[in-house]
Amino acid sequence: MISNRIIKDYNNNGVVVLRNVVPKKWITILKRGLKKNFQNPSKYKCVYEKNNKKELFYDDYCNWNKIDEYKKFIFESDIGKIAQKLMQSNKVNVFHEHVLVKEIGSKKRTPWHQDQSYYCVNGKDNCSFWIPLDEVNKNSSPEFVIGSNKWNKQFLPTKFFGHSYDQKDGEFQNIPDIESKRTKYKIKSWKMNIGDAVVFNFSTVHGAPANRSKNRRRAFSIRFTGDDATYIKRKGEMSPPFPHVKLKKGQALDSKTFPVLISS
Image (cartoon, rainbow, N blue to C red; front, side, top):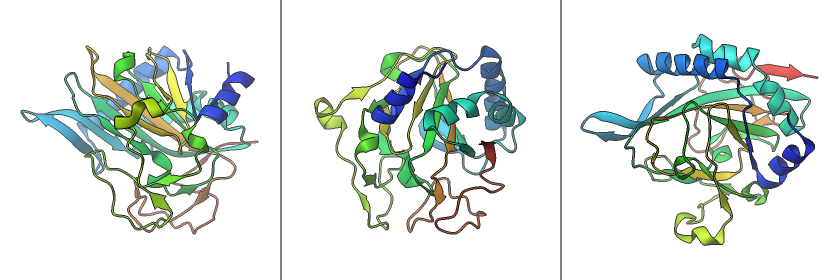
């Protein structure tokens, strides 16, 4: 299922689309978990857009150890094996899950950003799966700047409300104004069907348009790290914050918070 060509494209482009890799039974289970999640959200739930008090764009994360459906998918499906092949890694750690919902009529754009600068992770062996729980039109699907994983730059995190974090980490720089100079970049997105997944490196620059589909746009994201991943406590705000993690800079992530899923 994961050919050498796919692995090469993932490493070169920083993103790849995998067709029909998540069996329908797991989509059903994840939908059930997502419903449970937002019936009793965590303290991390955030609403980015409302209309007449109706929530249109919102998310939550770090609930996999409290929601059985998420845990079953992570530990019992083949998703970890797929991550291992893409990363070409001996080890796979669970990093965290993130669920995002854009309801019908959501007009807010997810700003261009790079995930790794939010995270407490250094290293290049990592991957994030964006798994739609609804069909997504190409013009409502996440967009990726092809090859941006090779830029070797760290960009200042941007809150989904539209403003940047306070600058505290000296190596971070402002992200380019990609939206107003789209023709300067190779930007790619895909129509997504149930069972598909987009997988991208933490350093790949991406964003997402408004929901122009005729249905909700629910997505389950699961993030993994590989062999070279180590812990870093950034000077500025981190997301997720992981306040209870006691790891030191440079240590492997292996811990109760970031369990080893595969080791070979």
